[in-house]
Image (cartoon, rainbow, N blue to C red; front, side, top):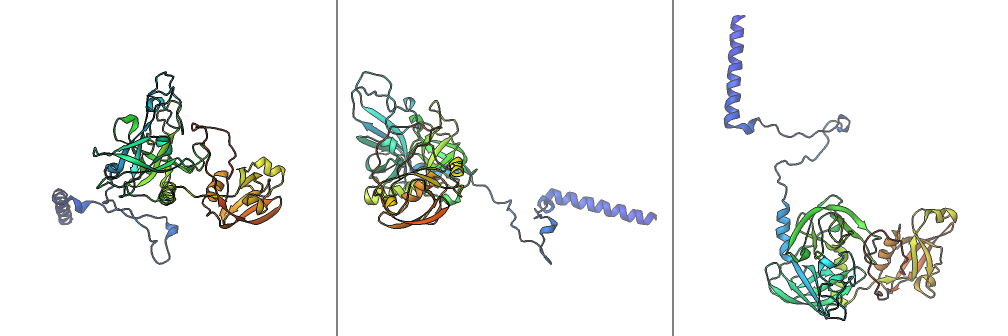
Length: 408
């Protein structure tokens, strides 16, 4: 017995000594490798369930790399307007302008007649010098100048504007221009990290961070076609027209407005999705205008009480409250009281979707629109016309508001 105890004690002593030596000189040998886990009822018969285990050795890309990649292509935009009677020199100063408004700002009372200067941001998206910014940044400007982050300045040419999306396209003639790469909207998810880059309050290029708070925001009254990215990244006056970028430094949106009662950031900002801005830019560069479809109806969201009262067997769709006489929809047989449920096979659930779907139709083409008329489901073939030029409207600040019909 004594001999067995002696052998056991010597073995334990040697094992402890070996562990001490290994932990001192080769600690990695003792680290436990991560194991995949799954409930027992998910195992495949005769084997294991294939799973993907995160590689703990892959470093997370820092946001500073995304900022370094995109920042050189973000510019400061200065728009000058001629002096007008009763206008104030501070009328376009960001301290005196509510950032969420489009069109003319509310002016501070002042008798002097002085030139107006507006400040904003822009994004270089092409080696040929094309820039994206907001229409409200350059609207009515007599002269536009752009300053790059490397200190270079240039006079910008206004290629075109689209008030219905609040997008404007500028062009500058400089060599070796930095260009931002465009991101993919279908890969964005709520909760993704983003950066906002611009020139708030004219203090210089500034980067702020946050997440995507929501996608597809509409009904804000900022523009006709709304499909905004909502973010809590700090956006302030002067950030208009600046960039919203993803963690890889790709452009995913053009910052355009905030929800605020004071003009400062409250954590609710809105950006125009890059796919919409790109579509507008291509139309402005190619044709000098954005061509959209039009069918001549007055739409509004389908009210559940209305659907119940008139025994309409659909819960989602857009109620047609008016049809333009001799317009495309009228000629196809559409009537007030019809509920649009599909356009070109695409389900329609609200007015915003209807506006965007009709606008995407090619003018002078035929499309099938599915409507519900009482208990009868109909497919109407509509010959699409070109949307008339937008009328200038008074500016509205973003926030709760009554829904308004829009001739589409």
